[in-house]
Image 1 (cartoon, rainbow, N blue to C red):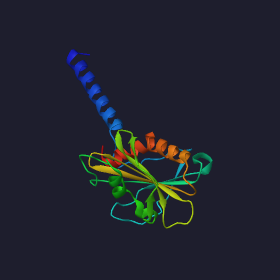
Image 2 (image 1 turned 120 degrees about the vertical axis):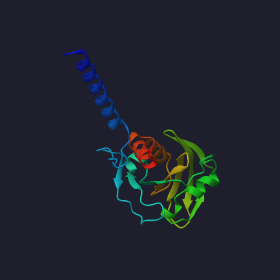
Image 3 (image 1 turned 45 degrees about the vertical axis):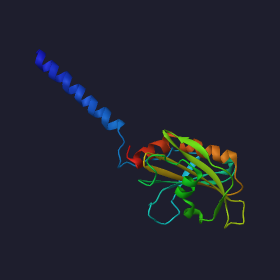
Image 4 (image 1 turned 90 degrees about the horizontal axis):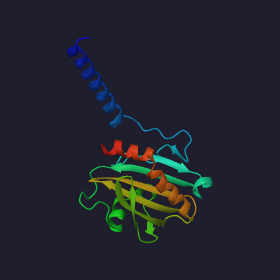
Length: 187
């Protein structure tokens, strides 16, 4: 083989390799993210109607793993976060939370705390349901990437458990959820 043909073949092979690498490494915004086959958090149908934020994703964790039955609702809210400060205070968290999904009547149990989900920062805070006479409680976790945010609501079927909150934070930091967040946020 002559030298110019060899150089051309090497160049074309390298170019095809680069294209293949980019095709598999960049997020495909049309793809769906499929949960693991044997999850601790099982995906269930979104139980709420359509609103201005659209539908999100819903997951459940059993009491055997989470200490109590927990439902986790998560969805993106693009362009709705303060681009400079993000979710910087409990007031920001209260305003950005998805309390309408659980009936709206909540009372904070204490102060919120800072959280880190993947590359994003935000806050979490526990609440009791005012409209419910049971021991149900809610934890709101809101985090952002620049001007876009993701609102997560953990609803405990019984009294709040530290185990369930730890399991929820681990799930939010899982490769599955972080990949979903990249797609939702267009990263």
